[in-house]
Amino acid sequence: MTADVQNAVIDVINARVSFGAVKALDGVTLAIQPGECVGLVGHNGAGKSTIVNVINGGLTPHEGSIALSGRPVGNYGVKVARDHGIRCVFQELSLCPNLTVTENTRVMHHSLKGWGWRKQAGAVVRAKLDEIFPGHHISASALVGDLTIAERQMVEIATAFSEVAQKVKLIILDEPTSSLDAGLAAQLLNYVRTFVEAGGSVIFISHILGEILSTCDRIVIMKDGKVVATKPASEFTEHGLVEIMGSVVKAPAARVARVASNDEPVLSAAKRQGQGLAFRAHRGEIIGLAGLGGHGQTETLIDLYFRHSGSWLRERTPRVTFVAGDRTLNGVFPLWSILKNLSIGSLTDLSSYGVVNHASEVQLVQSWKSRIEIRTKDTENRILSLSGGNQQKVLFARALATQASVVLMDDPMRGVDIGTKQEVYSILRSEADNGRTFIWYSTEMDEICLCDRVYVFNNGIMVAELSGGDVTEKNVLAASFMGAAA
Image (cartoon, rainbow, N blue to C red):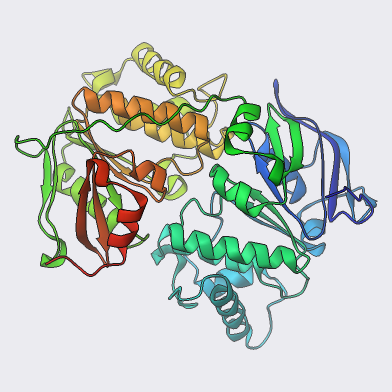
């Protein structure tokens, strides 16, 4: 698509943003045209979140200018952006958990006021949920805090796309499918294409490169705060995208056929609801939990965690540790430093007579910072100074730094770039080879196919067990839609 600055929904020109010595944006120019979906890709820390915050008005660039529909805007901010029809769905969900879906819709759309606003707001969000996610079963009167992370993501997406007082011109979707299963993701991507065909514009950020290539018209690649490439999506391949981003994608390692262990399981659980299959995990296995989202995978992880760590008195060497998928709600301590967020899981190993050895704490954190490549110059910085993907790395490192023999993982690689994912997969396999057991719920089929054995869930029950070469997308999907096992 040929750039037409006069018709561009927004045109960011030579934007520069610095946080201390870090150049978050280093002269970025980006114009978004009506009727196009622009894929924005780059590793964690490349500058994607910063340019998004500039476009949605949440951050004023230190240098550069912004134009709307060809007209320069001197005092650009959130209100100006919203009045121009620019909305953003953040990777870190921004709904108020203590309010209902209807009340959150009112928070987003201030024009919903006066007598009968609840009825009007409820109708607005229900209609958009039905349009984007048919068959969703989300009640407008439900408390957001009671929804699953996938349902919260769906509500936030529907609220952003809803037109109340202004026409929606540009939607920024930051990792919108990170909490959605394959079926829900397909529904969203279909709606995005429909929205763009009708003249709307979308900035689509995702580390799932297949989604970018299949959905976007144009792809912009960022690296170290700069735009390093921009051209039609049809001119890219997955390998080409990763090469430009600056990471080498390794070919998938051949699956190692693992003989079922005759040892006693390190963890086990009875049939859920008295139906389906019982659960077991042996030493050194990577066990996948698969199936459509919200069918009992997270609940199984939580049950396993509390069953083996429910004592009021914490064991010096815990048996299990947990990597949360919803880092905002269950993961990071937002007021703490990166160092404290990482080391808190290992304080018993770092202390003597109740006093933490600070030198040992720093050594542990620096070791994992290097090993998992957490992008920060100073681990004393606040955890929220990191990008979402780097925050997730801290949570992963927190778990791996413990001596727990079993690691429970609730979709931990959400929003992490492909290069980092491969590094983490390598660490995970190395730890498993040394006897550590991983129980891994993931919404990404590529990750499920890395597992030694997989339990497939349907309606809260484990309906199938796959192992070795039988762990394929075809088999997982087939089992996801079958009835419960006897």
